[in-house]
Image 1 (tube, one colour):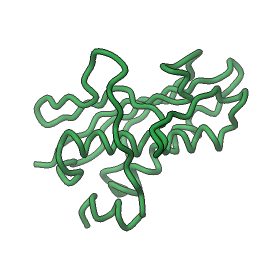
Image 2 (spheres, one colour; image 1 turned 135 degrees about the vertical axis):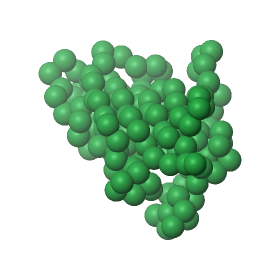
Image 3 (cartoon, helix red, strand yellow; image 1 turned 180 degrees about the vertical axis):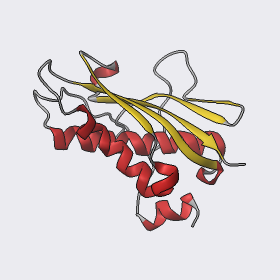
Image 4 (tube, one colour; image 1 turned 45 degrees about the vertical axis):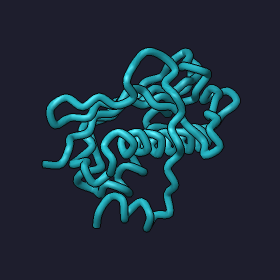
Length: 154
């Protein structure tokens, strides 16, 4: 099944991507790799989820924000590549969580991103090498920022 068909089957809606917040490319293809700049938790209405995990946001809410970030990342890929079916696999994920100093559940938060990728791309192509870090702050107050690398299909 194509990734586009799987998105429809899962009833996942991709957001419309806003303009970049700075001087960078949201997606840059070099050879057979697509590098995605840091993406944030974009809601369907165009706003972003903001907050700090461990303070005003619990693990479940931050994980949902990471899920929204996965959809934003897929939207950028689709916009840049024309179709998600040009994706071969997810290679690497780096997730940052805007968190209090005592927050330790960064991997559980970033699982929201990883679960969407697994569901859309499948067990083999959707599970990547991954890091999850805490951050004292993130752009625009986002609760998560995630960058990723995808291999393109041959």
